[in-house]
Length: 305
Image (cartoon, rainbow, N blue to C red; front, side, top):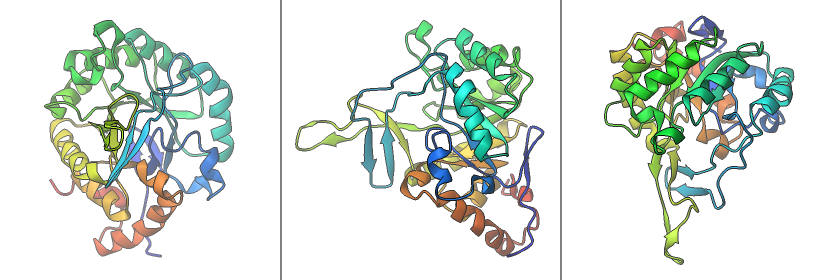
């Protein structure tokens, strides 16, 4: 195997390689630990959490597409207190690298309360604040679709934690760079993008939407070019580390995302298709780097600009 330095850094947190798993596609790690040693991963982003337990949306809430998957799971999770008491210690037994906590919220106060609770959780290295959640105090409009709301959440979270805060942005906006700038100006330590794209499917037999909630988030290879473009735009707009995600399915995709500006990547839907996806990608990365004449994978970040 080629001798390539695979280490990357995210706001002072060192990862052994740039491959992390994306929130919502890996549970809390237990299911995948039966397939391979999770210690091979650069980082684990745990399933999204909210202040209170959520059962999620009614079914059906998954629909396949030709090059991806639609989901409308609805942030199903046991609530932050249960996650801290049960799930985080469970992850820590299986994985000794950086754990990224994906934090949801339906008000600014809820985001802040969640992040304050996580601040003292030793196993959590990075807070990934998902601002694609609907703001219940603003008619359901997503925090991530408005620069002022995105900045407000960023400021509130930064005030209650000393952990690195990465704001996870929604692609369902006109100008992703504007949202990223607002988060950067409010003190964010990094940016994660993209979340899923809104989509829907219709059942020809029933003439009804396949997903009970009508629309869902599209992920998988179909969104990869959109994610690369948005990572590129945000890298040009802000001087913060970026976690790139959206359709990454191969070692070549990892390198392309890094060339666009990502310091690390998260792999999501590929895990659902092949539970060994991340392991295979990590094993293939040194060979791809050798072809690219790269001795340090971190040198790929932004090299296409």
